Length: 308
Figure 1 (cartoon, rainbow, N blue to C red):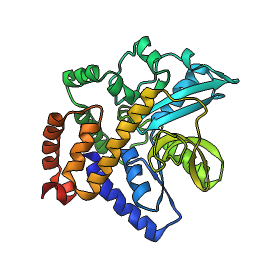
Figure 2 (tube, rainbow, N blue to C red):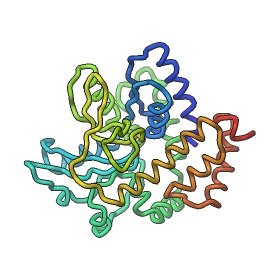
Figure 3 (cartoon, rainbow, N blue to C red):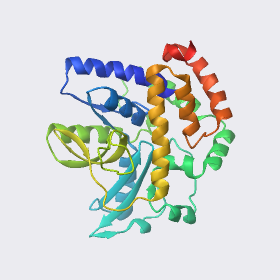
Figure 4 (tube, rainbow, N blue to C red):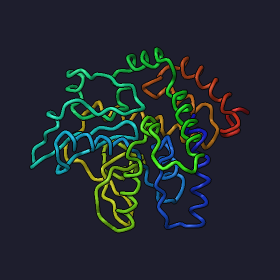
């Protein structure tokens, strides 16, 4: 529903960029970041780069673990569905020695079993907990005193009240609870790399363009990219990708494509198909119930075709 509300708004912004500043780069954090990038890169001419703070937190965790930033890595996935598939120090892949994955403030912590991690030998982004241990995550959510959305409303109400005070001179502690750590670092770093033609490596949401042979060229992926004043360009991976990763990426990408189509056309059929193909739903009865409720609740913010 976030996508159905936001894609039309972002398309409108992109159309204005096309007219007013066609050579500009649009660095997008608006969620759902991967679906927004999928829509804009395939339906506008704007130079869009999708960003998320997920990788930069994963990278920081590895840096802290090793005590150095002097390592290379391979990274593959979609936004909120990604893995670090190798960590190389002095030519040696030390991935297996790095221990448990990093957690994030906005995701309930789960203890990954060693056998689970060995079955897909890669460091998963924190969001993979929803896929690896769906029932355990659902149980935690249902048993929680408040939903994450309710918690965020309370955090933001407190923040807005504090921001009304012109004497505020410190960063409110509530920001640490919101789940956006290192966003500014990611954004400023990639803008710097573009503006100053640095030829640096950053993780970003871009078109696949042949970098992953099991995905379509026009699919927007989240990848390690070479970034310079021409934009961000995905780097081809050297190591083979686990079949689990390939299959999950393909099914979630089908969901993203259908969601973009639904957001642009108001097609209930495409919205329903999107939910049915997503691994976290994958059931007609569940998909129909949630879609009926959410289309009604969001009627004034989405394509009018949904409610005709």
